[in-house]
Image (cartoon, rainbow, N blue to C red; front, side, top):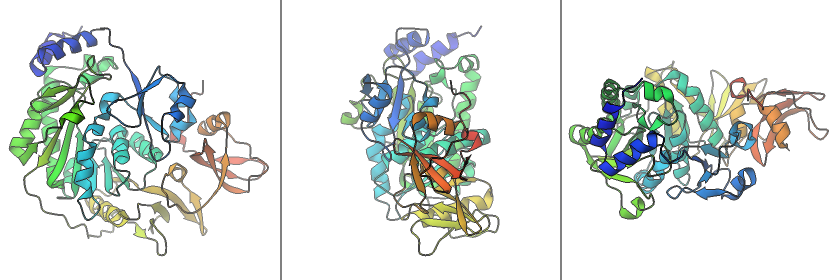
Length: 465
């Protein structure tokens, strides 16, 4: 049986006494219960009406996050086609803290004459990445979502594809490789790997694997990651440091280290922002969502502004092994990989910078580009075979056009399970874009008497009951 006394002592060291008492009571099975919250995709739906139609009237807003709502229970999201179409993201409300720094993020990006650039360093499964994309929906920055652990990349690419924004690159590379892009990013969000004390109510493994040594090892790893990525943040840019843990070694001590050793100013939040979260714990070097005081499982975050110098990187390089996509003449936002004959849709304003960054990063790590904008499809025999991601795109500019067919929930679940879909009499032969509640869901190829289901095998629903 795990000895929890070292954990209890560390919590009392790390938090104000009253907050520590509430946390320990909550983790011990106190009265506070877990919550279920979702965040809407502003590119695809708006307002609580959509959720009420799907989940009933008993929803309430998350006070600190626009477009986020608590549900009265936990429905079977797997069987909701709108979930697979990217209408919303299921996320713990504590993890929605980027809403509290959205003004700082937007300010850092909008002053960049090149359009700005933002990095989510440890991004999988994509909750904070999709939140950043939403926060910056009125801008056109390059947004890079990175995940260094290979098995965690597919969930990230799936969730980014569902969100549908064309200004996003997904990479699977090290912080050191990204750090080569010196001075490129205006904002870096680093939700670093941690000891996971905020996962204790969700995972028995998190409880059993916890130890003071694990905490110390995580703190050391976190410093190494931040040190490696630090050159990529421009002077005056923002680092948003966060963990889903509570102890001071991984949280406050590391924030102080970044400020004093790497060169940054700690940025306190304004009172009107902090007042949005009743129960948020203010620490000398950051802010803590504490389970039992605030709905959610807990999250630490701090904002720092870089004051040490950094030189701007020159991305204009070419390598035969790099991931290279070039603009298609006469189009707006279309790029072509000549080797594979694959078409990509990128944000028209920032697409050239996205393409250059892909080349730069893949020179050292040829396979690190996992996704660039929206993959349109592959050219075969002079025609475009559509990619599944194109159906999920929320881009205002898209090509080519396909016949759209609205389907009901039962048919949508069959499609997502990769079952055969019977074509309707008014469907033309060829590729059909299926929609559910006006949301793009995926493609089938209508052969006349039957269709080929083009939903990706790895995204299929395995259990339909």
